[in-house]
Length: 446
Image (cartoon, rainbow, N blue to C red):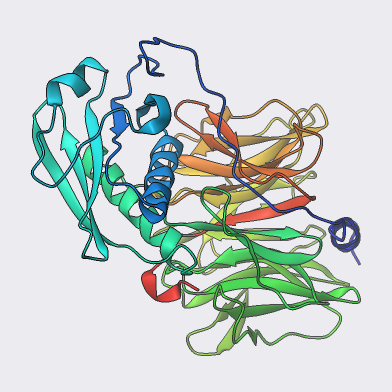
């Protein structure tokens, strides 16, 4: 058995042991409020357009809708959120009420969001106003489900994404979830840190989760006495089907192809660690893509067009990022490094548009998150505080979630790669291996 294979099994054993710590409930944490101009409001002038979420019709459900929308828009990092004292200082009123564009502009807003609901209906109208243009840019109908309805929060997240796209022309990522490992169990959490659920069965140690491109399936590893099998199923924890495995081998670090037909993964055994693919669509055709020859190959990730696979290899000594065609041909070094100077590079993941790769690399003995331009192969370091590892892209291509120890325990943090703003997503327990979903289709909500 190769040294990396033995190390991989040791790491997995330690990970499972570490994840049995008792965890408290998770919650979202708002980033610190920046200091700025204060005239009865909180607002920081900058290059981002001001966004104002207006007060209006009252009620427990509508208050929750307003709070979720405001948080989602803030977490999009595309707007300067303008906070009104008490949240309801500007009352919009009924559907025919006057919209005071000049007042909102004086407060620094480029956009305003209003929520109106008729007393005799179960639907709200969420309207995005272009304050400078003095027009209604987009109106979205929102079915007002009860607060305890499993789809309530995700339906509001989808409205937030519609607002982000209408205001900025870019996609949002509010209607998404992240998978992660805690106490040896596979868990799921919303984009904003709420609605945590456990997916994997009790008594089964889970590892290395990943999402299918449609958001309707996941894959992860079930660990058992030093070996592991891949299971594929839906993100609600139902109808899990094992990918054929051989007892005694460790199958892990799986990734779906962009069309969902294939799953690529690392397989470790006495002869080393290699990258394989399995055809899920045909339920057959296990194919080996790498041949170690005294090295190990792992952590495959498909490019969004499905033509290439980035992966980790030890063929140059320490683990580094390589790339190959989807059939295993044309293997070459991908992320540049200085032999004897650059530390190990691990956990690559393509950005949704295929232009960048995120990964973590040892810097003076501590892992830090980097991104690399896939064309120029220029590398940029994103983090420096604490240990930061296992990056995963949001579908908006702007945010990356990663594991950081900057507060003393490993938790999921999110960074905006354009501004460097960070927020903590989880707050309790020892958390590992996040995987960010694509946008969640309505049919897969619990």
